[in-house]
Amino acid sequence: MPKIVDHDERRAHIITAITKIIARDGFDSVTMRGIANEAGYAHGAIARYFPNKQSLLTAAFLHVFNESHERALACAESSRGLESLRRVIKELLPYQDATNNDARVVLAFWDRAAQDPELEALHHQNLLERRALYRSLLEQAEEDDELSNALDIEEAVNRVTVHAAGWQMVGLFVPESATKESLDASVEALIAGLRQQHHIN
Amino acid sequence: MPKIVDHDERRAHIITAITKIIARDGFDSVTMRGIANEAGYAHGAIARYFPNKQSLLTAAFLHVFNESHERALACAESSRGLESLRRVIKELLPYQDATNNDARVVLAFWDRAAQDPELEALHHQNLLERRALYRSLLEQAEEDDELSNALDIEEAVNRVTVHAAGWQMVGLFVPESATKESLDASVEALIAGLRQQHHIN
Image (cartoon, rainbow over all chains, first blue to last red; front, side):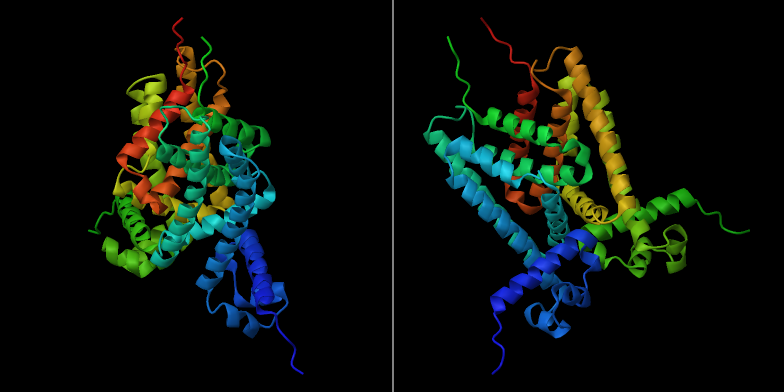
């Protein structure tokens, strides 16, 4: 009887191996042979799922994005409004080395997405999803009267997006500035800037 | 008599051609032949200045960085404190399409710098220079009593660095959010967050 192959499981296994290689050695160093070795499959078994390097990078990026997005959604559901937003923002910042390795995959993807219309559209879509999450939490905060009256929601969505993207770069290239204390302070300053200032007269 | 070659001029000419190609087609598409065609030189004339692709990317990135850094320094000298900082921040944001093309070169470099210790050290050094500029303007602002008392200068340097890096990414991938109005609002929110709030009692 032929061995039954769980294609989803095998695909997931290959993607984990790819993500590890890109994070460790860079996308330019990825070879079909290297992935086959890392994942423990024959070369042909990889090519069956991913016909070329671009499909590998796309899969690795979607893996990193979807995992972080699921974690962010879970954080969002744990509370409401600005408290939820704080938790989501913290979840997406490079607090750990492991997250920094993810940042290498993200940067490799940003670079290629800047040159390739198909990848650019994919990344645009991901960013719209993430922005929709920020927006829904900011709207909750507005309902709960937590936000500064002068605040424009779209401008606030930009602040949060820019903050998350900027720390990916700083975490990688100025790691001495991305301590837990700095990241915490940055999140608190961002949240404080959104919050209604209650004047005591 | 042999023709006298101005090496600095020729080097600068080649770098301009490279930057244009990377911004337009991506680093992966750069070939020695393509640069020779674009710059109007023989292949050998290029190889004399840049022996390999990495030296090309490094030169293009330093060109983009140094040009923007000189513009930033000029802005810094036009005023003092927070007003200087506002001008510097605006100079470095992706207000124009031309700057967006620079962002493609910057992203290509970030990606490679994330994998290569020599490029990483170079980028780290560039970021330290830029942070030193932000810090000096924040210290001026502190002398002039413009800053919020609770503000930590290093935390403020992080805010400005993260803001600049984050907008490079958003400007490229969510260009519909990077309008002149959004960028202006973002800068004003950043400056307002640093500023001393004068309470009228």
